[in-house]
Image (cartoon, rainbow over all chains, first blue to last red; front, side):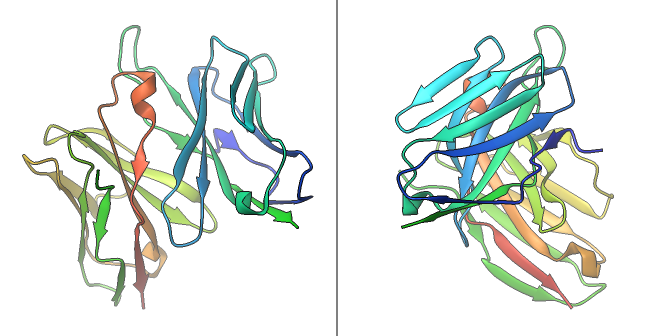
Length: 117
Length: 116
């Protein structure tokens, strides 16, 4: 049973336009969310994160939106560049216990973004 | 500052053999997590070690095991290899898993294991 779902295996956008990558989750205990980018033959690299107490976090061209009621988050890349072409993973974690440590990351299966010049 | 290193980068084994993969975390990082990446299942958490102790474990059979040394380096072992174990095995390190900001794990390039 997938707790973190990325329903679009691939996405193609034109350079300069907006890329929107979506992620849905089922576990209401998740309170921290991250996006990773992965190039072929490399490990994933951290992109941006958001805590459940926020609904938006922005870092340069990257913005993550969190809709807790819908259990949905999205990553917006504006403007998209050819170098953004990669696989993007959404990940989530939940705190273990009331004052427990952050649990480990549960990943989605990824969305392959292709940005065409 | 050196990143996370994993050795070997590529490995070919046959069914029934065992394999040991190695991971050296970023200097100062005490938490090491292992993940399996396959096309069908994406990234799946195997286990996490912190200060030489396994702190969390995913839903993998007992054939998958690991350990962490006093210098935080970690090894992962898979015994009695099966064809389905063919995957990219990723190691990630972080300061600790005790705070949300520390969940920004840094990944190594992975070890590509092929089981024939």
